[in-house]
Structures are given as structure tokens and as C-alpha cells.
Length: 415
Ligand code: NAP
Image: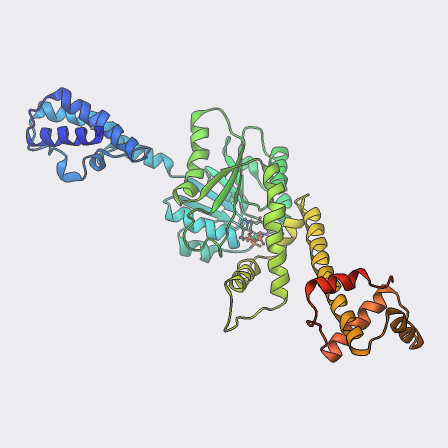
């Protein structure tokens, strides 16, 4: 309603530039804010609030006094000619230095450049051409890189090489108060490393884009970006700088998740590490497209696709540098054994039932026959024998219904 009133008043003032200055003032401030509030916007330009530039009073056709009043009120609403807004935008442009210009380093660099930030990079290999192609500057020598004084330095090195890279990195050549970040897929490890190795006056933010060149090759909408502001100085520009960096991800549509590095690693072990493990297992099975793919099978193929391009170093890092990973791997192994045991127990019952159906042997007769043939009735020999029988005869029951089988199971001979 107030937005409607605001635009009506402004429309009147446009038609009649001599309209009450009080009304104009109310409309240009209250109206704009009310409109922004109604539409859930944090900020809104006066042009938007008015529904288009055609309704903004023209400088030339409006008498000087009323233009001045309207103009002053419109300033805090970020008009296109507003120098303040332009200056603020300029401030938001960061010089971002990326250390480790591999798969993820380049992927992020492209998006930073698309968002009007300047990117410089350094890495062990020579990525001059790749950098040039995307509009970044490449410095093979880390000293030269640091002397460019980036606002932010992001470590996108492999988890395994990060410690050695930081140890030999010439941080003393960076500007004091530089913001240092990482994008490693584990978080406690770089956090501790940064706190131990970086000068006290450096700011630290740990990031983890929960996506990469494959899963985030299109939009980043709703893809999670986990961040932990580990140590940020009190001064306003330092707080703005980290927010500025985070806003790149936010503006790209990422789901921003503020979370401690410790909690990240706990959750990532049971989600990300398991995903990579299963993806690798399925990948080594060389699953193929079929003409009758189900949706479930399609998602397995996608999983293989999304994890197969990641380096083994990355996967190994997820395991080695997340203290929760071993436990999750054990749980996965246990779950697999349990599922397999369920199958084999059922198989065992079905085969035994069929054996009884075919030759009418009692468990004792069967045991005696096998022992005569030189076989021991231990569990292993028994199961192997059952499986051999299925493989050679193709006999799998099906003639009996579930309650019967359960009944038969309870009468099973003790082994
Ligand atoms: P990666 O194999 O984990 O890391 C490759 C990068 O590490 C390259 O820049 C490489 O430099 C550098 N590196 C490897 N060994 C090195 C060594 N001994 N000394 C110095 N540098 C070394 O692959 P990535 O996918 O690009 O991942 C980079 C980081 O991002 C990792 O920490 C990973 O956990 C994280 N991350 C990856 C993804 C993803 O989807 N790929 C997503 C989120 C986070 P050179 O190429 O110059 O040798």
C-alpha cells in the first residue's frame, strides 16, 4: 500500500514539478524503502521503485529548486549516476591471488574474473597460457606473486601438498593484514596450519565450496559454500573484505553455510568421503550405459562421473586429513558385509530347501554324504558348496513362500 502511495505521489510530482516538497520527500525515502521491504530487497534503486526511468523527473525540464530537493533524497537510493554507489562498487573489486592453479584453482579463477575481480595465480607447474586465456596474470615465482600484494590469497593446493606449500611460501612479502583463505575439502587441518604458520595480523577464513568443476560447471545456485571466519580483525575494512569475498559466492546463488571447521569435518566424513568412496568403487566396476537405465542407475552413473575426474590425491586427502574418515570407512565396510550376509543367508536357506526337495536328504544324511566325500562341515566349506551348487545347477528355490522358509531356517542343522 505504502509503495502504491509512494509511486502515486511521485507520479504526481513528475507531472507537476511544483508539487509539495514534503510529499516528494516522503515519497522518495519512505516510499522507496517500503517498496524494497514489500519485495524483500535489501536495497532498491529509485528507478526500480518508480517502475522505470521514464518516471524519474528530468533535470532539464524541472525547475532548479525542486530538482535539488528530489536529487538529494534520491542519492541514498543508488542511482546510476550516483558516484557514491560507483565508489562502493570499485571498493568491492578485489585482487585475488590463487596458490595452486590446478582443477579447482582455475575453475574458481574464471568465476572471480566473471565477477569483475582481478586474479593473479602461482603454482608448481606453468599455467601461463591457461591464465592468459581467462584474463588472469600468472607468476611462476611465489615471491613475484606475493609482491603483487593481493587483497586475498586463496590456497587451492592439494590437501597433501598444502603444508609444504605454506612452509615455503614467502608470506613476509605479502602486505600486512592480508586475508588468507583456503578451499581444501577438509577444514580442521588448514585452520590449524594457518593459525600456526601465518603472522598474527593476517586474517583467516576457511572455505569449502561443496562443488567443483563438474558439479558446478553451470549455475552455482543452491550449491553449498561452507565458511568459517577463523580470525578477522576488528577494523571495518577487514570485516568488509571478508564479506566482499563471500559475496562472490552469495551473488552466484550459493547456499551460504557458516559452520565451524570441526563440524564441517564431522559432517563431510559421512557425506562427502562416503560419496567419493562409493563413486570410486562404482567407477572401478566400469558401469556402462544401458538402453533400460532406471533413474536410480542414472544417478549412480552421475556419481561416477562427478567423482572420477577428481585426483586420487584429493580422495586420499579426504581420508588422511579428516580424523572422522576411518570410522566412516569402517561403517561402510560393515554395512556392506551385513547386506552381503543377508543375501547369502537367504541364498543358503533357499538352496537347502531345494536340496531337501530334490533328494529328500535329512541334514544328517547330507552331512554324512559330504564328509564321505572328504569335506568338512565348517561354515566356510558349507557356504562355498552351496554357492557352487547354485552356479552349476542354477537351482534357486522359489517354490516355497516366506513363512515356510523361515520355518525351515529355524530347523536348520547346527554347524
Ligand atoms: P588436487 O589434486 O587436490 O590439487 C591440485 C593442485 O595442487 C594443483 O594446483 C597442484 O599444483 C597442487 N599440487 C599438487 N601437488 C603439489 C606439490 N607437491 N607441491 C605444490 N603444489 C602441488 O586437485 P583440485 O581438484 O585442483 O583441488 C584443489 C583443492 O581444492 C584441494 O585441496 C581439494 O580438496 C579442494 N577442492 C576440490 C574440489 C573439486 O571438485 N575438485 C572441490 C572443492 C574443494 P600443480 O598443478 O602446479 O602441480
